[in-house]
Amino acid sequence: MFARIWSQIENGLVCRAVVLTFTMLFASACQPVTPTFRPPNHNELQAFARDKNITPIVDKLLDDSLVVLYETNTSFGYYLLRVQEPQGLLSALSNVSAAKSDQPILIIGRLTGAQPFVVVIIQDMTLRAKTTAIEIAVDSQNYLTSTTDGKSGVIVSSPSPVKEWKTVTLYDAQGQILYRQRESHLQQLRVLNSGIEDIKGLTILFPGFTADGEAARVEYGDVPAGKTTDYRNVASGVYRYSAFAYTLDGRGIIQAVMD
Figure 1: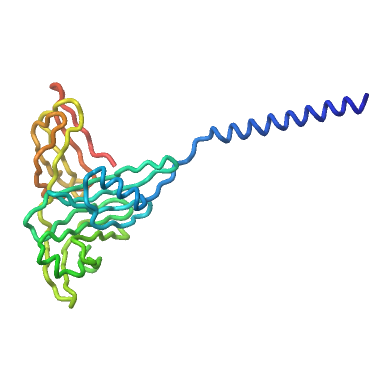
Figure 2: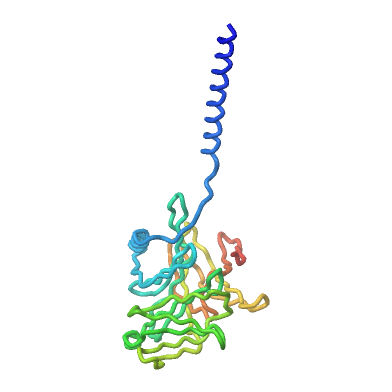
């Protein structure tokens, strides 16, 4: 009699333990997974390039992201790419492009973020063939350098914040100066209206380098749905932070600068 009662109690404890264990496992499975980030691998980058119809030139690792310098028939540009796990979702954190021109070199990049970077593209074919190294002045005492390895451009990152990218100098294999650009040439920007509504009087505003600095205004006029504007010169340079204003259905819309 006592043994049978004890057996029932023991079986009950075992069942409870099984139920408790199952409950804990179920609760654990329902916990949200904290996303992690990594740079894309070679196969992911190649698939992205095919999808965007771009030709990668060179790339550079920045923490959990990858900067990719690319070329199309009419432009150069860069993508800042990152993959979110466990979904394996590849996303472009930023994309800047500029039309090809007859200028010797083209300079694009960003001044913000944990690792600011600058992209230098050699557009002149003669200079490209002779250049082996590129030097970028951050200020009067600090310089960043990179070899070209026969490529048409380089990506150079700074370990600390910068106010602006200054003189860019191209060197040949003997260390002789081939070309020096003391002031950046105008960068260009165009806008795609990916929505389904026409917008009117579009203006993009890039803030100044200081809190009270004057914003640079780039006016595009009316942009029909699904259409892309012509390129506009941006004297202050094209970078991630911008505001915009336009009219939709007779209503004025202003989007302030966001990080």
